[in-house]
Image: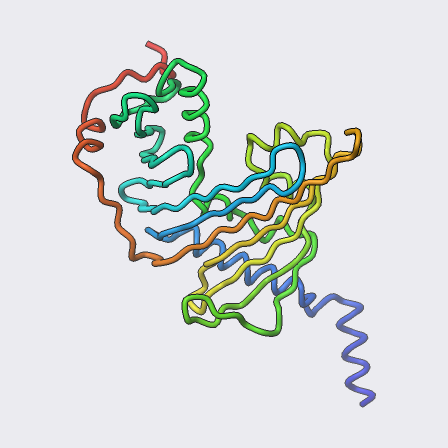
Length: 253
């Protein structure tokens, strides 16, 4: 008993044994890096804005294929294909597939500019997950696993740092919330293969300067499936546009 107590004090004094939460952070970090290295996957993203002047929700579904590109289907925006800096999307009035070159919009009207900006702001989930473990202020691995797609998944949960919580707010909403106080927490589910298959964040935004004060809740969830098994098929119309030479206005002549 005396020897055990002595060892415990020695560990506390020297820091020889890592803090349990630190181990959890490192485990999640390894899962994030493995997820970032996936060649392909299917995904779904859901965001809700509850309270405030413009409550609502939207959902994005899509497919990421590292060798080809990625596509997503967005409410009120339609299907969008991304190939590096190139964007292919349906013209809002003509209804035809249109290649949007870097630095340009699908249409000069306000609607076209907004649609193109929304398409450019889209990011595949693994990029949203980047350095996820560093964004937690506190983190713990739950003792119980939870099933996703029939597999027992480890669950990591904790509070987010304020800057990290702000990063999870979509750009269009973030601009409206610059003066608010932001708090948040997150949970990440890691499957037995070491891949993050679900990330759920819950953001609270309080704007005390408003009269009356505004409180907005923004739950946001990403889910990944078919890791390294999904394949992006490009429609013939889209492929033809990609093969057509286009000027890049962002490059100096």
